[in-house]
Image 1 (spheres, rainbow, N blue to C red):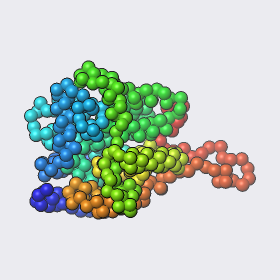
Image 2 (tube, rainbow, N blue to C red):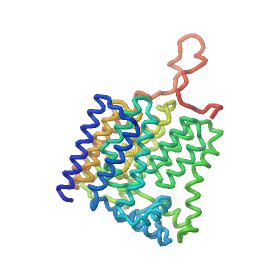
Image 3 (cartoon, rainbow, N blue to C red):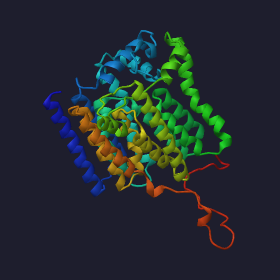
Image 4 (cartoon, one colour):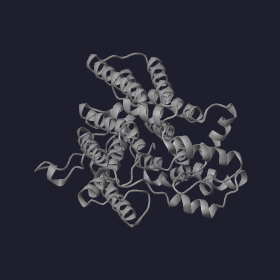
Length: 412
């Protein structure tokens, strides 16, 4: 990578960092439309600087996926292993955008940057206070600039669906929220975790209908793919369910590599598969803990805790994963939120722009994980009332304080 490119990016990221700090201290609150313009403009600038340096998964693999769909081929089967393991929602869009005859790096980032403009609005919508400041903080976030403008990954698009689902939950539009989660799953599989927020927001009697709404959209993409692509549903199901993330350079799995002096990284292999299973077990334990401790928290706060817990426990990792909790961290965050945002931003900048030193990579990831744990929304952690908490004499109180969001009521 050219020194001038790195210098230009560091200048942009440094400037955005300084603006974020000053805006936070002085509580700058431009109109949301201004923040949207800033968000889109900065990401376009980063995309221009990144021309010729976009990571290979987007610059080459996604381009191949779009080309496969244009020629009626099933990208799940035609692509090499772990290049594409998702439903064809984005490949359909990319194949249509190819008719613009623009450079691929531009075509890929058009929907990503547009989604980031929407995400800026949604941060303001979800924020409980200082809405315009929160939108501006997201607009100039170095981490968001790197994932959307430099990398061009599709996670911000799926994130738009999930944030919209949280807005629908706040308005008790449960079916709409479920459908939006389903659309997110059709784009990329990780939005499935937002289904947890949908289900916990209403009474169990409604769960079958909501689950049906969540799965309807991805199932529609799945079962109709043979109509547009030379797809075999059995092969597609096997490849989607067999997806694995890259293991060995993040968090506890990276520490294992350093301590054991085993330079074994990648998507598959006996060690990687074992660690992926351990990571899944750790996340399940973390999820059950969060479900108990944050059982009465607002859905967005609950999801922030879930996403942070995933990043802390996972063995498989991609740098773009760091953007998942970012809008919620800014919308619902406190001062401790920045203990996640800044280390994660440094890690992402090094991963995209820096020399690939494994030891430094792992060290920065550990710092980011520590920040993730410190940034958990502990101030909104509400444990269930225990018998020991009740008055020593007299009956227990007849009414408990109710949260300010809809929770499993008959109106749900």
